[in-house]
Image (tube, rainbow over all chains, first blue to last red; front, side, top):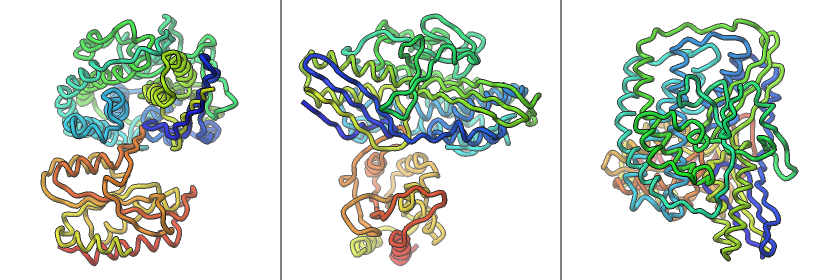
Length: 427
Length: 161
């Protein structure tokens, strides 16, 4: 039997899923990505740190701040730029804005309808109008932070290597603080909605998780080390020794393996690896909802994103208070003209690596690994697992196809550009 | 165009120019997909102050409109691959359009539904594109460019304060 669903909705990208089932055996699972290679790494060669901070984020409109911060961190490490505290804090605030914008869109508009039994967020409006409006307000708030700090909410140019063109005014920052405090009660109640959802158990199997290891044993969205759920901690600059990139013949996107096995990055990885460092309400909610199934079931990524939204809203007031106490620093200059730097940050969808070499102040080679490329092998593995179990349960191909889409969506994949395909071939 | 003219004439009996919000959607680097953005920009120049493009952060505009519980007419402009000739304009209500959601955008249908709940009317005026070819510079086909000229002219003729 052959079943085809011609549109993998509520994900971003030009790709698809093909599952072939023969009798009680799953013969093949392929997550195919047709997104045209954009050769960003090659185009980064010959460019200065400022140019790369402006150019490489063009990889993605939704994670442009993550790419900018990863690019800046890589260049500044390569060429030894000083990083004044105010610059660090302003970058952190900007990054938090992107997490808020992206997580809120995914949790409320993309994932929640799956679990509440609605075909889309549009259909949710009749019963959950207040939640939808507040979620949009949250998304708008994330955009506002990015716009304030980076000049525009997508592809802003205020942040660059060496600092910011302009730092925000105190009053603007205080407004952000007030708004974050005002949105927190909604997010707490919304996290309870997400935490109360029934999570399917047809795909449970352990995997390895990895994320940045922020300094000083804190929770956060960047660091110069990587931490794995098996306990390993490595310097980010050694990532190539542990994360093996590979290609597959049916997809343009590269894949990544850790110790020859698939692994997972993203909000769930962050909470599994460093969730015990959360404080305040975020910690309370983490402890309230954390259970043994988290390490086996990618659907918990949605709840992890909701808890991160609590973290982000709680983090902002402190960041603002610290920032406004500090003088605006001058743009910093590089301390040398050649070297290698690796910038690892947590994009909303997971670990993002920018790795540059510079000579005479210009980039000589670049390597960028995006979170979705790291997740693809695990997405395939969990879809395969779901296919085996759902097939055993006698589920029909339409049902299975929807569940496979749901699994892919749980990872919040960002493949960029449209047209999708989920195909179940049952012989 | 007759349908669009008739539609605008009907709406002009109820709404003033200042009660209209125009939201242009699309991508100017994909040829005729730039219809909504270009039309919104021309309408702004033609005196429609409430005329915005996708790059103006639609979430903010929609939420602001939703918070004002007063009547208004919101017109989304975009290109759409419906049955018709290139450059043809067609009007769609929220019932006519799908609710595709991606990680980069909220579906227009959701905005329309929320706007409806706050007492506003919203429609999509779409153009049938001739080409969606990627371009390094914004450029549109003659048929779609003419559609924009006609649409701007109609809106200017039908609505005033």
